[in-house]
Length: 187
Image 1 (cartoon, rainbow, N blue to C red):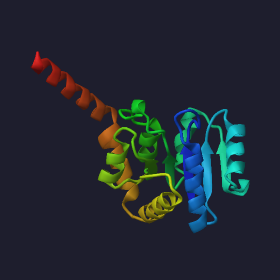
Image 2 (cartoon, rainbow, N blue to C red):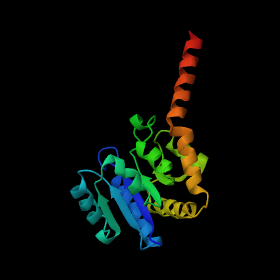
Image 3 (cartoon, helix red, strand yellow):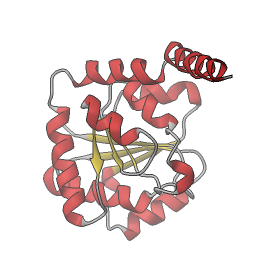
């Protein structure tokens, strides 16, 4: 079966798209019939240029622009998701929307260190792999771990459970309520 790695969203300022392509190249070395499915609006020329620079054949790439309500259907075609974000100060307390979307669709993820609680959720819940550095060896190691994780028969269930636990509206309301109660108790 052809392994489909998925990338959803922008490839701009805060995203390390070149590193995504390095991981995909590492994947191709292990599973040479893999495909990178990219869901993106409006940056296709830039993406194709980057793919050429990375030496990846367009046979292994599919780029689509879809409406928001079609994104989950595209994610369901993927075996796993990938997103690398610059570990900048402003990203330390953020959580990428695509992370919750991948998990909600039952897809494990590979991401990098230094972005909000992504690392602790991926590792703590066993729903993905954290790229610890950007060397070729780190890319290869992370891809091999991801391929092993995808074979876990409980991975989809674990991903959806984790999405509900951390990202559901109900969970968010409870967390805000707890913060507000703590604040009012301190007054």
